[in-house]
Image (cartoon, rainbow, N blue to C red; front, top):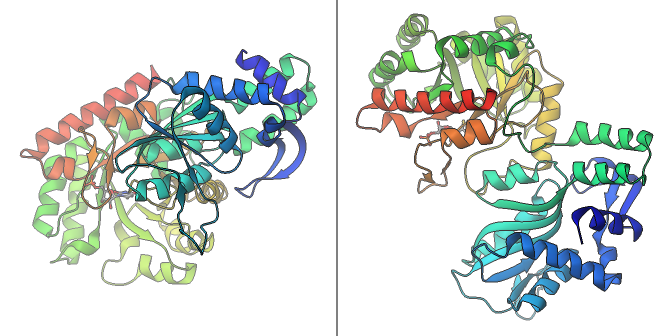
Length: 464
Ligand code: S5P
């Protein structure tokens, strides 16, 4: 069966419904895909299992795990036909008997393929991956029938998992329209919803007319966003240095020696042991000399009233010198309001942490989606995100990505690295944040040149 026939068959058996449906992510969707009905159509179920098996059978795995409940019959059908063992995650862990979260026989180190019916934000998939990984099973691939294009692929990829989907929501809608199953009116209504809620997989080539940093500067109202985007093209650098050193002298040395290579100097000012205001003066002199912007990576996370003081007062007086600061959104939009009261009159800018680079972090799915909404409501002050790649189609937002090294890998405390090429070209981000990859190198200045070149080439490739 072709992919198109499969979509039409699913529609015929009531697997695709139109109306108003509350999704697990909390958003109201005018379209609902209910693959549970497929258990009533054994031939269709087998077709689905076969097409999904075809997609992944060459990959390296020796056990399957279906995500409960809808994907369990799909995984079972794959297992029976292809003689591959399966394990099953309990949705509710029993409080009696064996108390197991995973049923079936497995050995630590076995490679497990995750089987899911559809992926929206990716949260259900993670609920299944977590207990498997805790039991020392290795997971690297996830196969799904439908990618709803609402962030799941990116989230999985940001945590090191590859998503293999048979079709996307866009393809499903196009097929239903082409075959007259929905009219143009319905198609547009659903598309409108999808456009507002989708996080499409970043295109390999960015065909947006505002594709260069300079063109995008025209779309920004915030003066720091404009300045930053313009200076990036002028300086030919999308490199931010994470200058995580602990003395004034080391920080000044980095700012002076690596200054010519960077667009942004990112600081954690509270780790400097001998901090005093003279450091700020010297850094400001170097920022003028080499033309870069300060980003104090303070990661505010409190209520609006408290962050106002943290931003403006204390010994660091961050608002006086940091062009950009960042905040977690866990506290709700009040945090943006508080920071804005202090920052906007001083022509400052804010980044929201929409995703993080560390293993097991909680910033994904509806958290990320709600963060994007908060940003959209505060475009005068919020200029972009800390994220693993491009999150929205709005070229006015700037994406900063940490966890970057020329050699992938990680550290012993959960940091996970991607290459500049992957972050800028594949994931569509704008700025690479590099710390230890540069300042721990034998020759940091030479290393910074390499990162700058790699980041810039990936950007040129993306816009060409
Ligand atoms: O999710 C995040 C967000 C940030 S801002 N992961 C991160 O690693 N960071 C910061 O980026 C982190 O605080 C550090 O300053 C830098 C990464 O440093 P590296 O040495 O791992 O490159």
